[in-house]
Amino acid sequence: MLRIEQLEVSIEGSRILREVQLEVGARELVCLIGRNGAGKTTTLRTIMGYLRPDRGLIEFQGQSLVGRPTHAIALLGIGFAPEDSAIFGDLTVAENIEIATWTRRSDRSGPERVARAYEVFPRLRAYGARAGTQLSGGERKMLSIARALALDPALLLLDEPFEGLSPAIIPSVAQGVAALTGLGHGILLAESNIHHVPEQASRLYVLERGEVIFAGRPDEARRDPAVLRVIAGQG
Image (cartoon, rainbow, N blue to C red; front, top):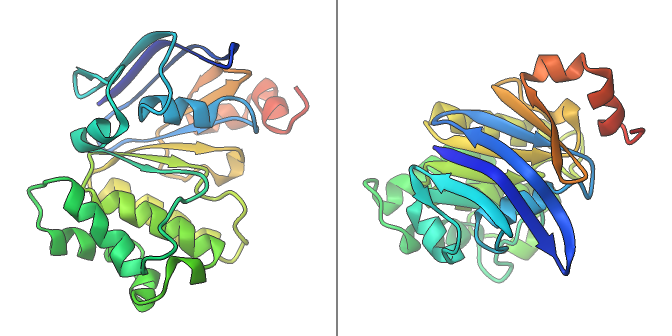
């Protein structure tokens, strides 16, 4: 579904990503792990077309994404929930979700896509008339993912969905993320805390200083002292 090879990205003359390689298959949950500044957000933003790579391949379902504008990449079937949620504060919860159904055609109707978003995050249904500015941080995270889901994408990019959340809200967000793969979506999830990696994750990539230093199963990463030192900030 998604294939990245030899990806290199610079920002203001500084090399941020170095020869990054990763892939996400259909219905697969893949995690990109690394401490703050490792290059996780840069990777996701480059996939979405916000940043243009210096070199490398980014393919989605056999089509190159390099050079395409962000809206065109979304129309191909990639949904993005950024770290800062980026919901529309002046719109209600219902309006935030519904707006995604207007921007991309799908085999599913708009109401079906909205219903699916509420199925994944049932907590949001009770807040349908509430403005985005009236939501907690965890609720904004849920809404950001629900809005991306309403696009009816084949692939979802989730940037730090658990960052800054209280322990009480993390299980609700985690359950929603787990439900997404069951609905047939591929997921690339960026996360700083290896302990937040969902149990359903099939593969994990560890990013450090813009390079992939580990690629394998989550259980293998948790047994690797070098990986754990990096994640703990001791590398």
